[in-house]
Image (cartoon, rainbow, N blue to C red; front, side):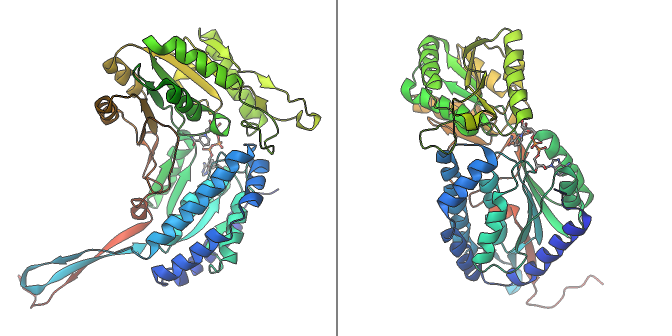
Length: 450
Ligand SMILES: NC(=O)C1=CN([C@@H]2O[C@H](COP(=O)(O)OP(=O)(O)OC[C@H]3O[C@@H](n4cnc5c(N)ncnc54)[C@H](O)[C@@H]3O)[C@@H](O)[C@H]2O)C=CC1
């Protein structure tokens, strides 16, 4: 397969530009109607199955991803008709007003861990604001974004409103440099995010960056341990651990550490690995062979640095012969971890939980924040004052109290520090896909100094 080159990118941007001319002039209500129609014709099962083939995650999770995509489109359709500015009264009857205007052709560049959901999370707010979009999925998972394109077209979107181009780095870079592109929204790794920002800077284009994390999960001795264990599993093993917001540094207060570890290990060992299309499967395959090898090498490195493998961390060969070539591994819990270990410092992006022990609140906050990343963080405690005090001090964009890794589309999601710029979801994202125009209106004579 040849990736899209300069000619195809030009064509896609040209189509998007022409669609923008029409789409941006529709009323919000008219845009909403088409978006709602798109949400309604999403075939949950068909797309979920395609996503499993695309990515390797379990069908159960793929369905939730499709649901999130649909909800996101519905949510922004709801906001499309309420976009409005401000009216400001000035002296002498003069006034000013602001208008929220679309940016133009927006580019979306996606990662491989949530292919369909990312395409929806970027396109829904973009289209609601009156923009058009050229979207590039990861070359590892090229399939389902195309389905979203078909859905928008079928729903009555003007031709070229949402375009999908295929390719990797070069294609992505052509998009970022294209003079007719107004904005770039990216989800992926930190090193690539930096490059995107640099490329966008040549055209002084705004960027939204959803990058990686090495997020902390703090479990205090006064927490409901059953829920804390569930939270820790949700924080680490969704999508085979390939989730940017994962709480992979699990800090457990010393008093409850043995009990926590016993329970977490037991539940981790019970995770059903195998054919991602089966209803009973809870963990499917990692995205690729090189990625599996990378994750397994992190486990080896952790052992060398003195961590204890409490369970898992090995390649897994399912008994079903048709799955033999799959990139499966057993989910891993690492004990005896310390802050300096590679497994505690670097984003592994696989099913590997590092458990650390702590004694005091002050100490754990310092250690939790001691990272250049800040996407998410979580705290489990029954003490309501502690919960809010801790959250106030956590340097992360998305914090959870007594839960982890839930992402309702109504609330903003995004990172502090090197985990990103801007937000996705929630009302605020309208600001990242639009620009403000201020209009001053003089009602009197011009008071000229000349
Ligand atoms: N935290 C997160 O959300 C994610 C983290 N990762 C981490 O990054 C590692 C590498 O995975 P990749 O898929 O290579 O992530 P990546 O960040 O390099 O790629 C993400 C997207 O950016 C595109 N891209 C890559 N280089 C580009 C460039 N120079 N200009 C424009 N677009 C470009 C890719 O084609 C893809 O669509 C993974 O193993 C994982 O550890 C990957 C994806 C998401």
